[in-house]
Amino acid sequence: MEFLLKFLPIVIYLLLIIILVVGIILSIKLLMTLNKVEKVVDDVNNKVQTLNGLFHVIDYTTDKIAFATDKITDSVVSFFKRVFKSHKRVEKKEEKEDYE
Image: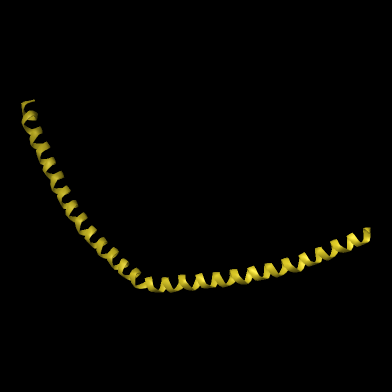
């Protein structure tokens, strides 16, 4: 029993030292990995910034195309409204004349 009281704390201290060393090694590996990830993210960010001008041109072009198609659609709709309104007015006038 006395042997276990002297031997058990030594085993626990050795295990704690091993856990501490493994934790330090894992922390160093994690820091190295995070530095590599940061470099990759910076590289991707720089590449996206170079494409920013292209995205601006595409956005401008789509806005102008949408504006043009809206104008064309509005003019076609107003044309059909005028065509169908004139027919209804003519029909109403003919109905009134028929009743009189």
